[in-house]
Length: 492
Image (cartoon, rainbow, N blue to C red; front, side):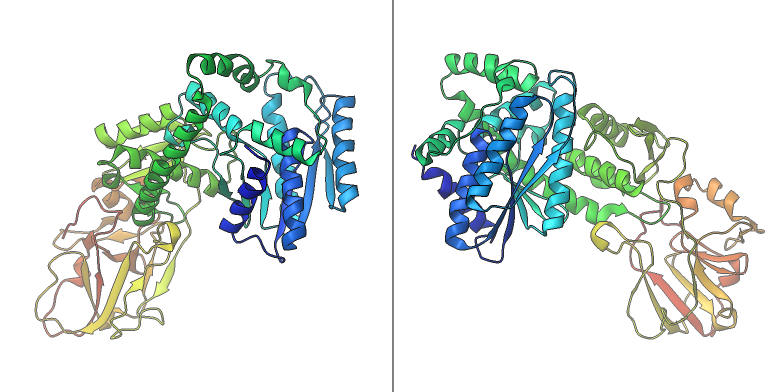
């Protein structure tokens, strides 16, 4: 393998992301080791040829005393000689690098510095020097903890962040290729002495386990990384399917974080991914920060069992003080005390009002009832009507013009009452919802048409006696186009 392999890999990566142009601004993470110096020098050569701006970032962890300072001096000297802007951060973690959790602390610290610098520089991407050997170690570590296909697919060549990309152009190259490139360029580097001590799981795999595996099956390290690349292809397809499930079947209204249960009962692979992403979005909405990016395998499988076997009303406690609650049609994510992730907001629109122009035949996307990616989940159509027959069910309401003044579409309020069509009398809405087994997380977020404290219509669920059909009566006709996800069944 020749040194040209490294610049070719870099050039292909930048071309794939349309970054090989003068207006690009790139940041590169540099430790001073062989891998990152090969990355830095390869990018430097390409920047001279294509004119993009290159910025180096070095993090001084303060864990290896004079050796850490020597790493920094090497990086500084290289960048000064080539006039590459360099940012140096002092993490000052202190302590022993072999202490439990120190590797994770250092990684999180680096990531925070990198993210802040990328945004400050307005860079389009940050490049790191992770290579094929790193990928093999990562996959083995994930396998040992019982990861699913996402973990077994290892590190991704590109991870999209908030307005920028994290690129790993060397994932298909072994460390030997980077070392050979650096020697061919006659560029100095420094070796981290702790890399030769089995003080972390990764180091132990590199120093003890992988050499034995290579003896048993020569070339297996590369094949493990290849398996990860194949798993990434499968994972991408399954993740896209899971995103489509969320887009069409998730409720994100204030007061609600729910998912249609029947959308997850067929394909377990898609369901597990949808559930994990649903939980991640719930953490974001509740502004909870977790050390773990998503649900572990055990919690994910417990959620899947709840969906498949119930019972309705069953719950599963989840990390960060949350729980899942299975309703008749929806799986809810709430705090363990039952409160919503995001407090419900009151909603009130007059009828017909400017948002409800009768006669336009344009469906109105009901405010708040949106899925992921702003996908509308509940729409209403309004038109002037003088129907000859009564509505067949509660999907359509006929509001006589005489009742329209004072009518609003809103969410339930304290003191609301409803007199259902054909019932002997009225009762508190709260009690009616309980009697009809509308799960608690939904009750504050339901859309209702009201006049004062009297509920005239709950779309798809109930029509009030005040809207009983009267022939030859001009009305405003309101129709929902589909069965709302909040309903257990369609009732008249």
